[in-house]
Structures are given as C-alpha cells and as structure tokens.
Image 1 (cartoon, helix red, strand yellow):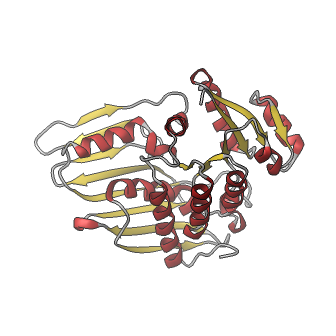
Image 2: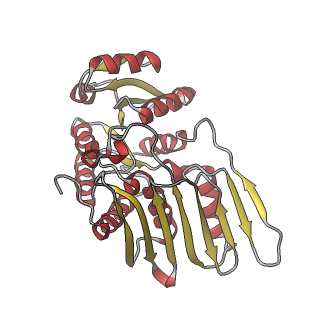
Image 3: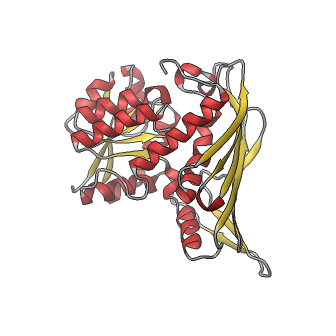
Length: 328
C-alpha cells in the first residue's frame, strides 16, 4: 500500500479536527480525499475548507467510493455502529471515533463484520497512542512503580452551548461517561485489564443522560481504580497511578497528556515532558497505516477484544446508574 486514502463520515468538530491532522500527514502517504454528510451543501463546504477532492450528500455514496481505503467515522455515538457496518460491508477499513459504540452488543456486531470481511477496524482512542502513554507503559514495565495498587482520576466540565447540546441528548448517545469517562475506563483497562468487580453511582439529569458518575473497580492482585466524570462542575482532568514503590501523575488534560511527574520515596520528583506533533491525533492514524501495511486486521496495541471489554465495563456502569439508550 503506497498511500492510505481516507474518507470522512460527518462534518462536525471532530471531523474537522481530524481532517486538519490528516493534511499534516500527507508527506507520509496519508491523504484525506472525501467527505460524506446527510446534506450535500455541508459536505461541499467541508471539502472546500479542508481541501478534499470529493463531497457526497449521503454516507452510502462515500462508502461506495472506490478511491477510499479507510473511513474515519465521526458521527454521534448513536450512529457509530450503523456507519461502521456500512463502510465495512462496502469493503472499507474503519477507524471509528470514541466511544466505539453505544454498547458491547453493538461492538460485537462491528467486530464480527470486520473479521468476516477481512477489514481493519480500530477505535480512534487517540490517547492510547500518545508519547506520554508510551512512556507510562515503559516506566511501569521497568518496575519503577513496583506493583500498581491504585489508579485515581477524573475531570469535570460544563458543556458550552444551547440546552440541547449533543452531550445532553439521549437519542445521540450523550452523557458524561461515553463522551469523557471512556478515557479513564480505557486507560485503566490498558494498565490493569478488565475489572473483576465494579461499583458505580451517579446522577441522571433532566436531560435523561448521566451528568455525573463515580465508579470503583477491582482488578487482579488487589489493584483498584476510582474514577469520576461530571458535566455539572469544572476541574481539569488528570490521573495518578500509585504503585508500592512510587507513583506517576498524568497532568491535565489526561486525554492528551504532555507532562508526567514520577515520584518515589526518598528521591526528588522526576518531571518528564512528552510533547505531541500537531494536535496529537496523528499517532493513531500512523498506527492504522502500520497495521494495514503489515496486513493486520486490528492493532496489537489496542486489540478489538479490549475495545469490546471497555464497552462492557461502560455497559455495567450505565446499568448501575440506571441509564439505557433508545433501542437497548
């Protein structure tokens, strides 16, 4: 594969951010070529703004375009499954924005389709591929923290905009957990694996979605994690990993950390800086390119089984909060 040609489904904020990132990767053979939207005028405006060759007024037309290798799905979470399946069934590889789906059952259908069609599929959980997270894994593997005992983190923000903000719409898969809590669930999963037990508490607001949630998970060898997310207050999101020999703090923002502080008893703190290139979204794209060049159907650094397990954890948190989405 000499170049990797991207199509983009959706014209919202993340689609625009992603298209900007792809332009910076053109020299490496990664090219954004087309965009699809429900409205042709929106697609054309997006294409002009981001210098794309083609604009389609339907998702089906984009999925059928023979000049696209892989599609980035950037629509609301309630549409991720449908749009990923459309593209996979049309022979395209898929990079699907987080959260991967609404439920683990939806994730199962997406994964089964990708495997049966021999297509690459990965969640666009960009945080997992950033230099700071690579450094965290390296420090832990090197024994700098000893055995992890506890992970603690969270953040809070109030959605800016009208009362019908998409994060407050149950029909679109809104809520704090799927939008932002997924970062904490995924990071903990990458370091400790899936939880053995889970306890969650939260608040379902008048919007009908979770506006605040706190959850505690128990993992193998006695490790625990406590995380929270809120749409009702403000606090920069960060996270701390505590081991029996030391700790690492991922300074805010945890979804794109560039600074780590490593603390060990009797030693001065070690501060590490891990700046990202451009906006930081390109690392996951380079991983997709690497996997496709190797003929892999999924990333060994974010395997589909783990993505599915993260969805199952969020299913359980939502169940304990009492939140169900339409159609469940």
